[in-house]
Image 1 (cartoon, rainbow, N blue to C red):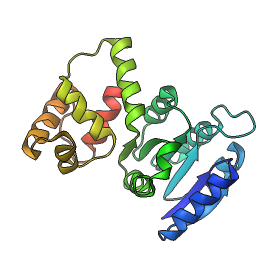
Image 2: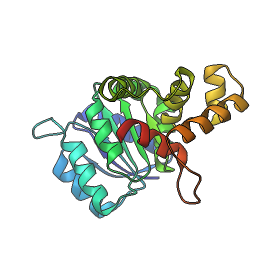
Image 3: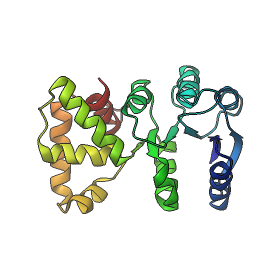
Image 4: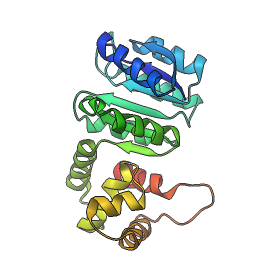
Length: 214
């Protein structure tokens, strides 16, 4: 895959470049600030962008803002955000921007090379790859703010695994239930969230978006 990488910390940026190249990916641009990131995304139009949320000059949300600006003209640009801390607001903004192929991972997870690379692949394929800690914070805030109670505890668990981009088999293995039970829970989730079958939409992604960000 052709990847644009944005990370201001030199050692981490260099390490990520080496990791990605070792697995056959091409880092077409590696930048350390929001302005250069936006330019790289526009010019290079990568298969996926791996972006630190906080970049120079202010270290607030420059990475996120560059991504959101780029997705206005490239709505299906796959983006995996990296963050040092759980910042639910940033995850919500990325999800609410529309399009497919979104992810949000804590930097601590990057030390797990296989998990990091798997997340990039899922995002590049148009799926989601949300850090479990971020999902938990989003779910807690959603329930507290809007009193959403239509999903059962088990359906919430299944939705959390969906948000991480897991397959039915992966969810079944993680929750120690059958794939048939997973399929039933997912069907119930779709029904409760009003997601009807269509030819062009990925309901697994839409379920995450509908529950967390609308």
